[in-house]
Amino acid sequence: MPVVEIDRAALIANWRMLDSRNPGARTGAAVKANGYGLGAAEVAAALSEAGCRDFFVAWAEEGAALRNSLDRLPANASTASAAPRIYVLQGLEPATVPLHLARNLTPVLSTPDDIAVWREGLRAAASKAPAALQLESGMNRLGLAAEDARSAADIAACGELDLCLVMSHLASADEATSQSAEQLDRFRTLAGLFPSIPRSFANSAGVFLGPDFAFDLTRPGIALYGGEAGPGSSEAIRTVARLTASVLQVRIAKAGEAVGYGAAARLSRDTRIATVGIGYADGYHRAASGAGVGMRQLRPGAEAILAGRRVPVLGRVSMDLTLLDVTDLPEDAVRPGARAEFFGPDMPIDAVATAAGTIAYELLTGLGPRVKRCWSSDGPLN
Ligand SMILES: *Cc1c(COP(=O)(O)O)cnc(C)c1O
Image 1 (spheres, helix red, strand yellow):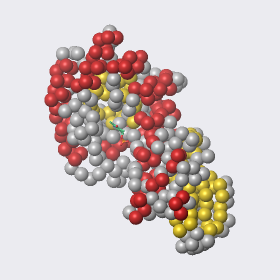
Image 2 (cartoon, protein in one colour):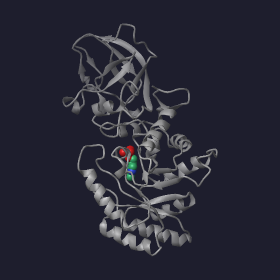
Image 3 (cartoon, protein in one colour):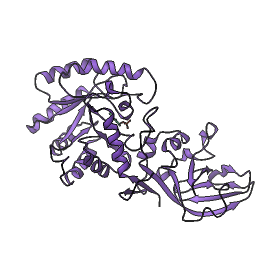
Image 4 (tube, helix red, strand yellow):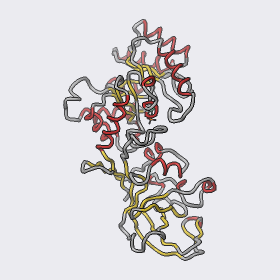
């Protein structure tokens, strides 16, 4: 079966590295989508131990599950103070307000409707609880535009909305572009409507943009898990996850023969083929195929590591199996049972993502349910 090994110490080291880049700000963690596919409960436990007190999820249900697992952690010096905050980034519907209240989840209100639903829910429950506000600064995704932000500021000024954070999200922090500076200006202006409320702006790549972007709380995700976060970030970020699967069969096929579905790869030489037990149902993208998918005219397919060497994917990735061309490895270097690395310390996840026309985020969050998550307490991956 495919396995993803997760290096707990590297995850913690990445959080500490990000935290140290902006000493004036607290450092949170985005753990949505099951901790970027690796396991939100384990990620949050490790980062709590390191001192992280602010977690971001997408949905209230994710937040409730996370609260359950945080509640079960043994108390230690860093968890002895107030309960960690769990921010829910989206989806505030009337039916989810009781869950927010029961599980101490902090909604991120992004529309006038969100604000109305929250206030009405608090009234109905005769309850008080803080909320965060998301401000639109140039991404046009979720967030209050200027006029709605001004109305929210009026409501907050009358004491009818208890705010613990105002935030916005960067669209292109991982690229050299003027958009980040423009967003920063807009965020500063809108956040100015909420004097004395803590502010949050930076995702992983934003953490690397310097102190102007850090404000009071940063919200890194991908860099925690070992993905690149813009130019110059990769040296600082440790690899956290290694995806491996085992060779099931090794065979030699003759020049001229066809390989895999659709006979997509036609062999130009006698070829030694390793058949490996991982496929697109495990989150190894079909677009990583070596041939036979539309994008192969644009770029070569992905490579994996076997017997210490890079070897190319051959033909189409199928649901449960992937073929590797191991002709250039010494004979007998590969036998059934050997494990191939599809990303990890020797095969950068961002390189694999590029070959498959996607990003590391999608490779991690798309890891299938049958990929076994193995947390290493027994030594680093690299
Ligand atoms: C996912 C997300 C983050 C984390 O982004 P990374 O690029 O993974 O660091 C931060 N803030 C918001 C609002 C998000 O949706």
